[in-house]
Image (cartoon, rainbow over all chains, first blue to last red; front, top):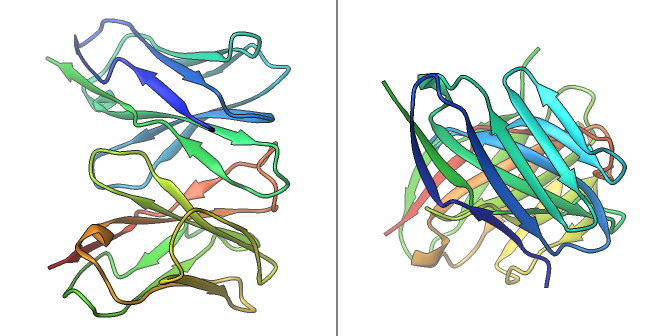
Length: 113
Length: 115
């Protein structure tokens, strides 16, 4: 069964600190992995997209890594800001010919002043 | 340029009723997908439409249906509403059918509450 698991479920950090979120997946055949940021009650916003051959991808203070062998990904947030408070969702696509995204349940991040 | 637009933003329906949700993709995008996000969970794939044809379907009952119009906008219809259909319904827009190398943009969603 195609699954995406994320940890931790929730996280509280102080403003200015770094944090790393984890994602493990069993989606097969693998096509690509994305990280999205979702504010409560809003639509997800794309942060990074990585294919099988990419190990790391950065977008400003966000850096995602991918290990396709172990089927693990991480999202590192540097110098956190209050506006980083949101859910971060790991999304994996299977190579099915159509666009079926498998979402994790997300990590809820709270950045505290 | 407008992003993915969805309507209505919020609505309340009673059990047994029918609902129609609407989505306009980003201009030039031909793929529209629908997702259901129950509170506290990640979105679940419902349908993908590309070039006005259904290209993929998730594990949802036949009460859920959709269509895509010649201008690539889309409607999601849900019949015989159940309390469990209460969720945020997200529309996703992209240029191409496949996901690889294809940025997928989401709308702000339609909040459906079934009472």
